[in-house]
Amino acid sequence: MGQKQSYPTSAELDALVRQMYQAGISYAEAVQEFRKQFVLTALREANWNESKAAPVLRMHRNTLRRTLRELNLDIRGLRKSERRPARNIDTQKQRRLAS
Image (cartoon, rainbow, N blue to C red; front, top):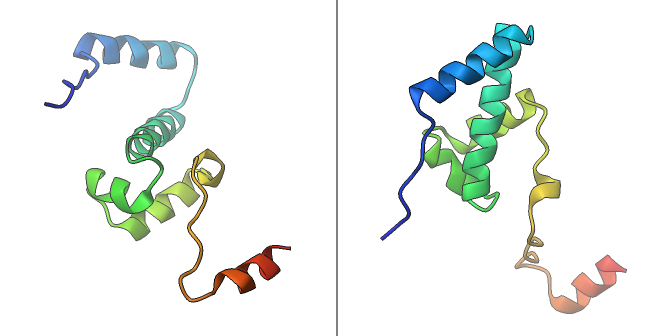
């Protein structure tokens, strides 16, 4: 079976909110940081695959892309795997294009 999820308790969230408030972080900044971390966590769990992360976040893939732009997140550098080659280009042409 899968691992049991560990979520912060109400007291932990309370402490974090108190720290952010005392540090002078505005409400808008706090919400934006929460959104960033929430989206990044889902993407990390989906191995940076936006199509797989979107349903977990209960949003459409296009909405996730728009959210990434709004949050100024560029996940291309975080992906570990290379993109697979296009199917309609043969290997010889691909090598010529790469050089």
